[in-house]
Image (tube, rainbow, N blue to C red; front, side, top):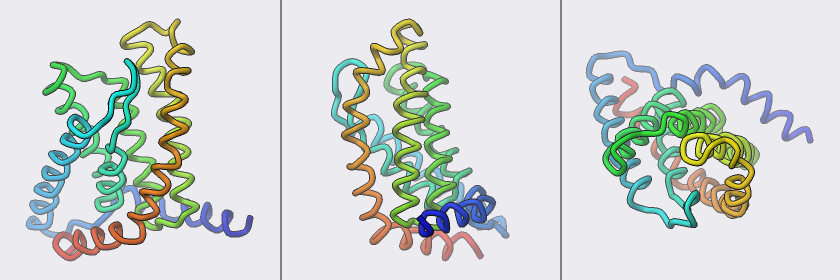
Length: 200
């Protein structure tokens, strides 16, 4: 219990640093950051629109959370959210001809969640907290509402909710395991690269 309490206290102390991410002190660093955000946006579009498994009419298993987490842990919550939103809007326009602003809001909230919680510390407790918030609150509740309102009517909320519950229950352990692996081998490495080339 004390371990969880320390993690939550540290989370509050890290809020400002996690939100803004790396410090950009020169015009060159800003240019490099914009280029990096462009590359990550393109990769996010590929993951979101190309690499997924459709499940029924309202659900799909996607690797988007991996790119969202990578962007937010590397760049900070704010820049990671910008990348996620751009990828969602551009990808939706390319594939469908228009974007669902309600789903885009959910994408933004997911990115902010991963960035604010994981940027400064990728402990197992923080990973679990981030995944539970993302899946149970943002994905299951808010995204279900966005899908219902945009495509089926709010009266169909609980029907859509029921179809999405299995997806969420499957994705929670998958995301936790993947992010723990990333925290051991990828996140710190990416943060060091970004700081080396951008934070000068």
